[in-house]
Image 1 (cartoon, rainbow, N blue to C red):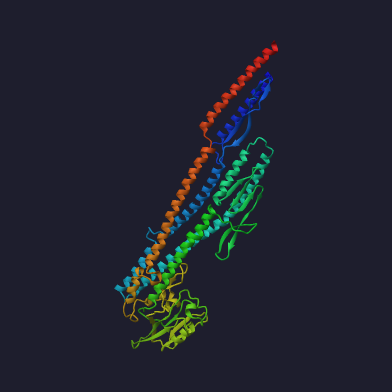
Image 2: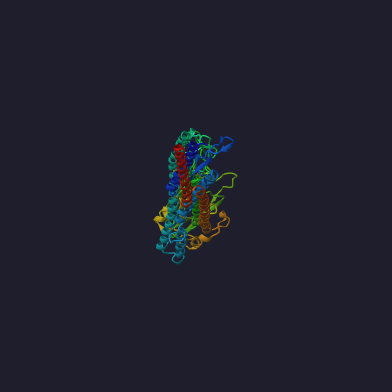
Amino acid sequence: MSLFGSIQMAGNSLRSNEIALQVIGQNIANANTPGYIREEVDLATAPAQRKGGLILGLGVRVRAVVQKIDLFLEQRLRGSVSDKAAAETIEQTYSQLEGLLGELGDTDLSTAMNNFFGSIAEILNQPESRSVRNLAVLQGQTLAQNIRRMAERAQTLVDDLDKRVQGMVGDINRLVSEIRTLNVRIAETEGGNTSGSDAVGLRDQRQVALENLAKLIDIRVVEQPSGGVVVYSGGDFLVYEGVMRQVEPVLDLETGKFFIHLSETDSALQPASGQLKGLYEARDDVLGGFLRDLDQFSATLIFEFNKLFASGQGLTGYSELTSEYAVDGANLPLDQAGLKFSPQNGSFQVLIYNQKTGLTQTTNIKVDLNGIDDETDLKSLAAALDAVDGLHAVVTSDKRLKLSVESADQQFSFANDTSFVLAALGLNTFFTGSSARDINVNRVVRSDPSLFAASRGGIGADTDTAVQLAAFLDRPLDTQRGDSIGVIYNRLAANVTQGSTIAKAEADGARIFNLTLSGQKLATSGVNVDEEALKMIAYQRSYQASARYISVLTQLFEILVNI
């Protein structure tokens, strides 16, 4: 090898070490840059050259500048990001739901129930007091109001999550567009590159965009030979190198909630994890399940309490009364007439009380719902009631039953309802409504608390019904397999608490796993300033040695010239 060849080889060494030092400087400068992937210089020996009978090396060359990245680890990390986002969304929803229940405070629903049934017990001590009955009515209103408020606030949380689902469309489309643009730019940058170097800055940006997209929906990323990536969500692709698919919110008419669909195919995204999965589960399962349980609890409270209440009598009777619930058709059997609560085969009694004589006339009304012949409908029930001496009954235009006395000296009440038709129609009931959203106290009782049905043996006769109502919280219910209303509510609250505990544990596990993978990524792709400093010293020494080598070659060249 000639002196000129040796100088050229030394120059290559200087350039290689200079590039290596520049890459180290780039790493140190971006040590704290989010999403930065550590770069490395891929050095290789230059091709050999034959000199006479010898084969001499031509020094070093820079083969490429590449990112230090584990693609398999990156895919696992994106999966953990998706799992963490879904778990934290559900955890946050459970936390809000626990705050809504407020079971550790003094304004929780169980306290309101205890106050209500406690106020009924006070009627036993002062059965003639209207003010004590009025207090029971007020406590019932408070209980109903608390249930409605809980349902409204839970529905507000559902609506908020639904709005977040709609808002996520813009974020997904923005990230998908960004990834597509970066695919094109990376392909253009690396397309004419024969060294194999990565478009490091652009790849860093794409890596950050992919991780942000993984927070929203679980994705699978496949890199192509061109340098672009294909991004899949489930079985559908969102990005295919330079092609992208946008998403849009679609309203489900059956549920009234929004879901995200691919605009091109109108197929729904079905994420297995990610924030979208968390929003769906929190909205439809966590909050939706809670609202369904609360509605079931409220319906049970309304119907079962009314079944007892409707067979009782107050301090006074009714002169006029209209049923709270309408039927779909006056000629339909009552158990098929679209009532919120279904009556059964049985009977009840109508009491006509004469205020002048003090005498009570009792008439038994049969309700035939045995499924054979002559099923009782609203029209036939009205006819049977109208046949009672002193009572007038009609079916109103809006298919309700209206009762009234025929003389101002008379009052009517009810007793011994085994058909539950009074509770089903809303006659002589305490609660109205059929769910947590519309539960309330009957306006008739609200306007006249003396109608609170505490008696069982006649108008103002005793407090036997109040005894049963006061113990209703712990009364086993046949329709609920022996569970009481208190047990049902405690189970509802326990489900929330248990679900919250599980959600927190899953979120903690997802966070720990994500931190573990992030640590592995940091070890592989992160910048360690101390290590970079050691490499810098090594390349600096190599650079100095190459410079010294050139100096020696220059001296030899001068000697040769001066000979």
